Length: 133
Image 1: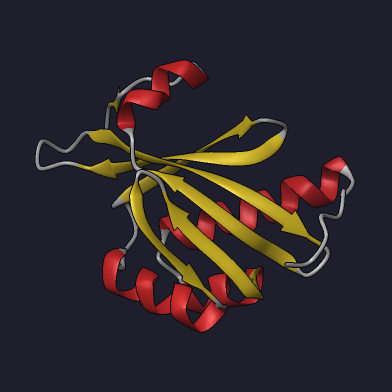
Image 2: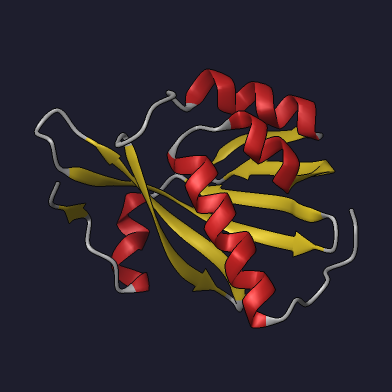
């Protein structure tokens, strides 16, 4: 993997905003431009991971339904790294905790995502389990 590159707070915020928007909209073309060629996507506690941009994009195409208004990404941080809480729209119209994504950023883009599939972690980040529509 590429070495971590510390960006200015403005550059970091722009990258975070672009990533969140692309993920919320399931915009795979935009995500392709943000992910490094050698990205690694892990999903603790699921013992599966994906290496490489092509494989990660294939995963996202299969698992992240396209469309606006289906998910919300809320910015947070974990161990000094940028992170996002993902909320998915439920049948009741509200948004419910799904998982936390912890990103590793490099000069080339997002080189690693740890997607913790544990909604019970949200309160540890000061985040609610449910958000109104």
